[in-house]
Amino acid sequence: MTDDTPFDDLDVPEDPLEDLDRATQQLTVRTEERRYGKKMVVIEGFEGATDLKSLASELKSALGTGGTVKDDTIELQGDHEERVRDLLIENGYAVTG
Image 1 (cartoon, one colour):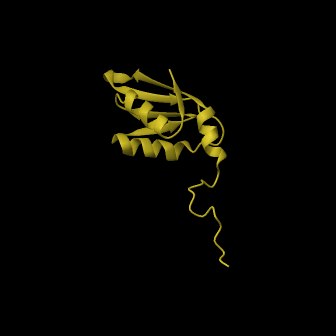
Image 2 (cartoon, rainbow, N blue to C red):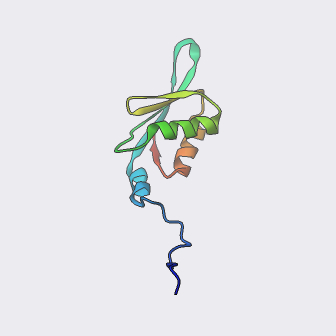
Image 3 (spheres, rainbow, N blue to C red):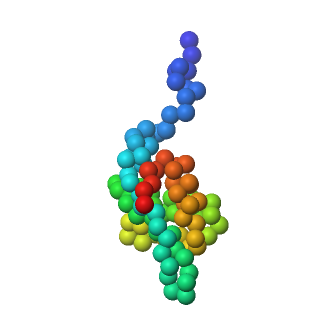
């Protein structure tokens, strides 16, 4: 007999409810114009224990831009609203606005 279980080959996340938490959040993505006409994408609506610093880092790397986490929002430099929406949807988030 082996110690292998029939589920070893399945790609099951450590916390399967994490995906459900993402899908139930309604995120808002909008572009603001800051000083000197600079554009900033603001992502709001995070709930629960979302790791905003990790998500912000992932988005900044994918977009090749700077940004920050303030309170419960992520702010990204530049006019990347459509691309941010696509990346969030790919990661399992529900995006509105």
